[in-house]
Length: 268
Image (cartoon, rainbow, N blue to C red; front, side):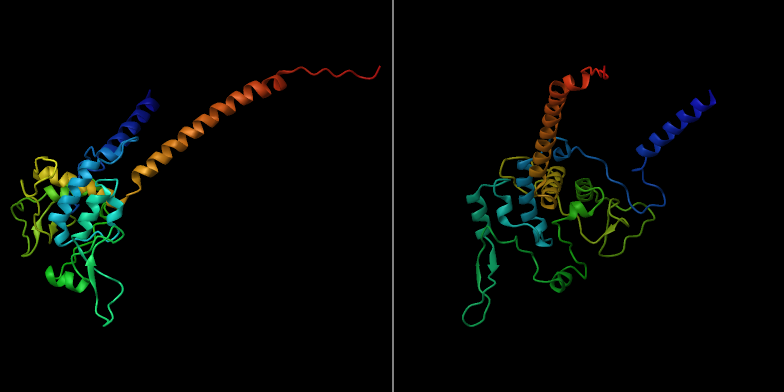
């Protein structure tokens, strides 16, 4: 009886510790994110193309004034959230400094092309720090991969701005956000209801915009996600078919050989 109770207690303890690993401790400096049902996390699910499109719109109108996505080209969004003609029009709205100067050695600006990277808001790190009181806005291309909770972190952070609790002193220039390590972040609250007018008519609530930009940044961190998952499913299906064929081959080709009887007749 005692060994059974001990084993049961061990199982319950392990399950409890597994379930409570996201509970914030008093010694920790931030609150852990809640797991949200983003569609791309399903075993056979892909990204929500409409959400990526809306998230790209939120990025362009809100986030791109400070943050860059240096790893993404305009062409990568073709067939994902926009058509080729739409992305050509968006790319042409940007002025890109051509790598080849003119005859006088001066830089030449031209309309953007699909092959160009999406331009950053600042020319260099020094300009970015100067415009943000010494803080450097991080590049968002791999932000979802760089944070432990991924898209959940981005969503929680964008919705997590609240008044500091009593007794908590927030220095000037910082803002209280319990989901940010240290709970003090230099970026002010960026989203508010109705801030963006979505092209598809979706109500632009704060939570909706945070969800869409989190989905978009999850895609920028892993643009090959859908293709990789499709190839993985095809590969597993192929392995299953080969296993079935192998079983039939073994049964019908080798079963008579393995079950045959051999008689050894000695010399007369």
